[in-house]
Length: 291
Image (cartoon, rainbow, N blue to C red; front, side, top):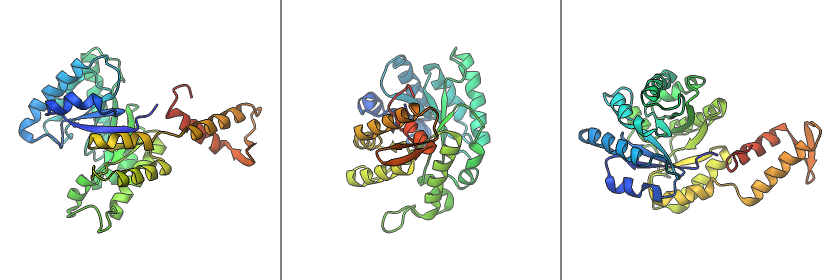
């Protein structure tokens, strides 16, 4: 199964950490980076470490941690503080090259061994959110078996570019951000990473969020980032296949299974070939673990 909703939780807020598991997100990203002021970094990593330890073995949302970028003095301290709590994964911000993911992989290997964790059990999520990172996004392919999800971000990219905003007057992202978004989607497909759409900033605009989520799923994204609890239910709904879609996908899989190895079959008056079978199996992977 894949995570439909990825909700950011500030790591320095006991109140928000306390409510995090009740928001219904498939994955929570406990944040030590942008939502935490420089002077609060040490306190936040201690809080997140304690939170992970307290939730050990609990079911529900996957618990991920967004550490600080590798070009800061905080990354190793963040990892040392949170790895004893066995997070499901580490979100690596502001990568400039696939080598950054490889470097994080090496850190995780050492810390998993130090904390008696299964080697390779900690996954990695990363993103395109800088000019250099977007240009080098293809270098992420093949660098680490831990890399399981990829997304994109327009806010830091705008800062990197020296732009005053990241959207035009109609609210549409500028072309450079559209390129970053489509690059993340394409690299996700090429590397078999889960492609996750970026945030929708106006958390009060449910209609806009729904429209963007529906479009993102049609394009190939299988989840979306959230910045507010009010967004989670909408994202989960939009990225959950309907019962009709699931039933059709099962029929496609079964029809090919009954076809004695045929590469093309007829179903409901339409001709289907292997790409349709792959599409059906991919849809079922979002809701079932047996495909």
